[in-house]
Image (cartoon, rainbow, N blue to C red):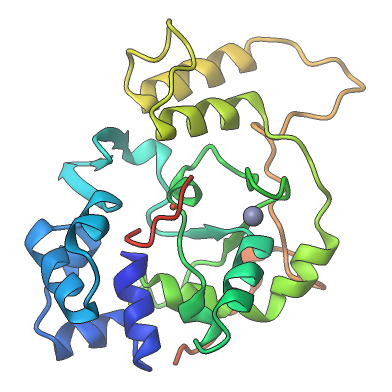
Length: 244
Ligand SMILES: [Zn+2]
């Protein structure tokens, strides 16, 4: 989905308008419909299989798959977009010929609700405020454009931290690597729920800061009281996942 959104931004429009202009079903893009993605790949002249292999695909009610891994709605961010300020700045720097919001590409890991920390930079992910109009929901590049003015400050002011155990576990599952003989046979949502329940039942030492896995410490733009108070601006994968 981020690929189609960035393609729209690269052409100076938003995802919905782009879909209308090219007779693409918007919901097909959102759901990772195979035929729709093939048409998007043809428009962009990119490898169809590469796009398809990194797509988040709707598999049923409240269920998606990513590279064959089942992801329930409870472990996904579907209406809010999180991004790493440092990764985003690197994308912009690496693509000076693109609009900044078209240069930033989504990572599959940023879609994981349990993940609040960039595994590459060890800094908090930035949760982009929800668009009050909801018409731009799922338009990754639009949301990225809201974050762009704050990226440099966010990256410079972020306090590095270690990944929490739940974050490490979720990333392992997304990568398809074995992490726990007990939990791995479960769907990721059930495993995350089990780990959260186990963590909640353990008393925390009074002088210990909660781990990143339980933290609600999200990056905020400078001078803002809360990320959710930032007004949206009009808009013009743990590997690379341009199809998200
Ligand atoms: Zn990063």
